[in-house]
Image (cartoon, rainbow over the protein chains, first blue to last red):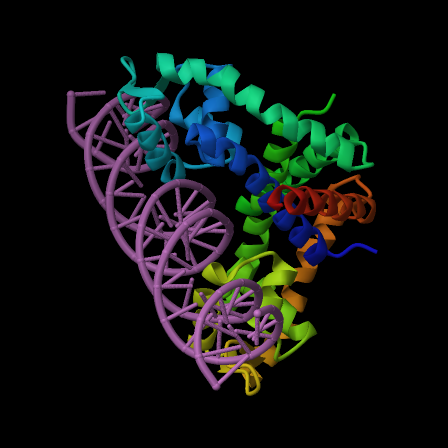
Amino acid sequence: MFSLHQLSLDLYSSSRLLIQLIQSILKEHNLTYPQYLTMKVLWEEDGILVKEIGERLHLDSGTLTPLIKKLERVNYVKRHRGDSDERTVHVELTYPGKSLESKVKQSLLPLEEKLNEVTNLDLAELNHSLQNLLESFNSLKNSSQT
Amino acid sequence: MFSLHQLSLDLYSSSRLLIQLIQSILKEHNLTYPQYLTMKVLWEEDGILVKEIGERLHLDSGTLTPLIKKLERVNYVKRHRGDSDERTVHVELTYPGKSLESKVKQSLLPLEEKLNEVTNLDLAELNHSLQNLLESFNSLKNSSQT
DNA sequence: TACAGTTAAATTGTATAAAATTTAAAATCT
DNA sequence: AGATTTTAAATTTTATACAATTTAACTGTA
């Protein structure tokens, strides 16, 4: 039996719980979870636009602008307006920002291990289903916009 | 292949996206999603303690106290200290709070329908896996506390 | 080329989250 | 009983989320 309420509550709870676990590790690097996500995007593609970060994380400038400004204050990134299009803002990693990648990756490994031990789920399979679900939500959102 | 990062991002994204969909419906009743969750708990068991609401939703008083005070201001609930234990606060539905239940349930039905149509996933099955995952996170959290 | 429409960030306002501390009351211990 | 510890809410602080609006810059077109 399926209930929208139960699905939403389970997504909401498990999301927040996992983020708490991850954040308890990230705090040794002085990063919050959304800040880590933003850094992760930049580690994959440096110099990207705020808008593009937003597309990958489903976040808008209302959330990202202050977050990226915070990352700039701690000297992990630099922001600069686009040359050809002055509306855009490019975000670039600094040297400290770049060197953070391997440290963060290392410190998250134990949690990944433990999760694999503690659960009897096929996490790769579950992850695949979640991406599928995400697609469904996206199409519902887009269809309700028109 | 399984990655902790990917799982967390997918949980985080799908959770927020689904909440946006639900919230766009709830706004006609002037409820946010966490406010709806709190009302839902009360519809299941009226007069419950703040602490008990927190246990069911994995939220603490830092979040719940102002939220419930808001529900009190719009006259959906009443708060009163316990008789035998004055540390506790019971939350009780008012008449408007009670009569909200059927209205909210009705207005959420179409979304539930649409989601079932748009996805080819077995949502009951996925939900079951999520509850399993939630349990894993809970045991990881508890084991890291000691 | 003026200008209406669109777009990218930023800003504003409201509502969470959650860690850490505080307060008051209850439970436990000696 | 009196002191210590624990517990339930509330409070404080920092950091998201996100809707709605604003600002500045770009685009298409008459």
